[in-house]
Image (cartoon, rainbow, N blue to C red):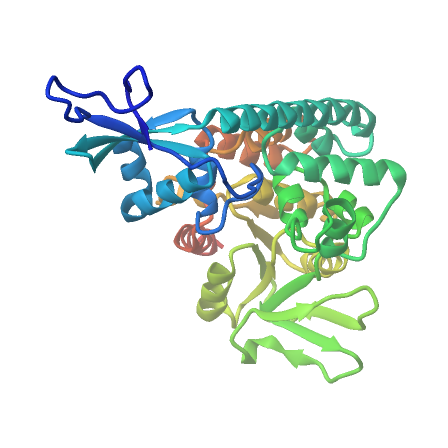
Length: 408
């Protein structure tokens, strides 16, 4: 314990009668403290509390208590014992009273300052590397190049983007997302969500395929569609609650065709699974439905395009976000010339407002809205970016599908 404003001899001050006169003190370690690293929370201290405490030289106790709640005192005492904190407390007749403030000890101020400097230097190097790779990768994948330019150095996505760009330039491929994570980050689970991160950043499906990061391609089919797989008998999907999900791999012997109903058969390609189920339930006898689980791989896309070539009308209903616009674009770019199609925007139906788009998503949408060759794609991209947030809700997708189907 160190006394606040001690006497000349380092002891607590006294009154005229020689009695101790102390109102505040600092609770400190006794000088023999166990080893502790800035990069790892000490035993008994939560990671989130450790990062928060280490981010400021001092904090008022009211702030500490508000952040940590009932564990504030025990956590700060633990950190004081190992020499990280000093706790400024009131004193009542030499008894510890209410805490006032906590302070980082000088050794820890120095240690954390050095760590911060090191992190800043590492981030700066990562930022410079991303800028260089952006220039090199632009001709291969402009979406990845744009994401490398705009992603901030402290965000999770940038190291993944940098690793992906370097692999594309080197021609490297991986046996799935976990292999990618193991190669670049030393652990299979650290960034096993790399496909989702890269897709959200605007990396093309072709790049994901080249990197070996495509997940198993799934396609749901329902309604007025007949399928045949692996030399099996043809199955009329009107007899099943759809969409029925199939895993379409390159070696699969799989065929699908529209089941004749009348001369005005419509194919609905839907991204939202619940909306696809609702449409199958309501119109499965006279409507063909294809559900694409996100950006379709080449094989399920080929099947959808084959179905579209025999339909009188194609309704494309993606989520109203950056991914949905790219899905619509990929489908439309493959449709046979003269196909009658319409892109439905779930955002035109009642929906809940969501968090605004990230900067890369907004810029990616703006690029599509201004430069894509298909006017329908430019139109949907412009509507989505002007709305400013994604619409991925089942009820909205159902609503726009119902309205479109009532017009046929």
